[in-house]
Length: 113
Length: 115
Image (cartoon, rainbow over all chains, first blue to last red; front, side, top):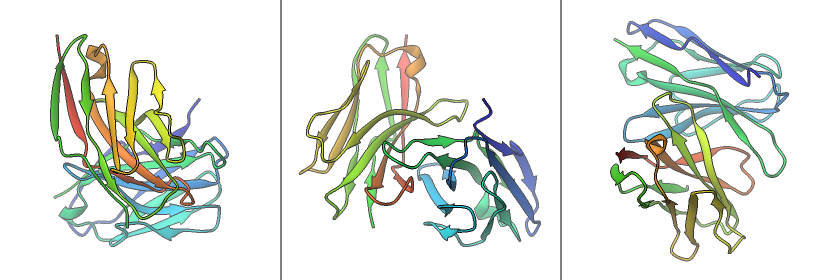
């Protein structure tokens, strides 16, 4: 039971470098999400995808891009990393319907120096 | 926009005792969902309990129960018979009735359980 898989688990970048965080789910969920977690601020929504082929901005989208490659995969790209993007990133997917259930990946710890 | 506030950055409890974590929220909507999530050191996000705003009855899950006060916009979590495994960061979260799983989270409360 893989659930939601994120790679990598840890990453260190230098300011200005780019990278893509990968996320895949094997539960046939339509909706997927990217959150970031910062100390004292809880989790905040970066982008979400309600279905394959659609993406929308969340609360904190600046500095990020996303791609919903297919129903399984939803990637998050940092084009030019900044120290302010140091955070733990969580990917999640949801079942839809009611009661809707949200499944989280195990997170990516990203440090930008 | 909705906001969720957890005013207790840290709480501690003795093993086997009861502890209550506070959460308040602000919304103009009448239908919504509220959640408590647990995040242990493993970083995994674990759903503890869920409350539908239209339900007057407070949700319970084994040792976990909530006190939902809709008029006061308050949603506290009570943990009874605390166990060492309950030590974790706890997040309160809000979800609009129609927003899918786009959650608004509180700042979190770090719970320590003392043996």
